[in-house]
Amino acid sequence: MVDVERLVPSGLIEQWAMHLRRQRSRAADAIWLIDNGFTIHDGRDGTPMDDATTRYRAEYEQIVSEVTSLLEQYDAVNLRRP
Image (cartoon, rainbow, N blue to C red; front, top):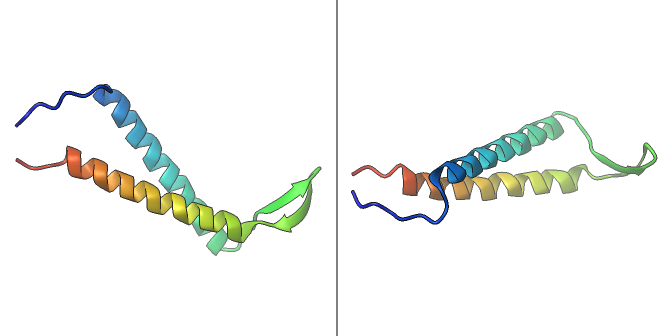
């Protein structure tokens, strides 16, 4: 196996990967809540003004998609079998 010189310590990279997994989990949970009737509203002074549920759901779907792609790349590099 060839040693790879990294400019970033592996422990820090592991922390980033864990953070990404948490973000994906939170986004997936939010999508589940929205799909089960939870709504999100933009508002002012505690008064809801606009329903922002569709916009937030789209953003959460994008987060899940992008993070899944990044973690697949991470796993492909770090879980290679000799």
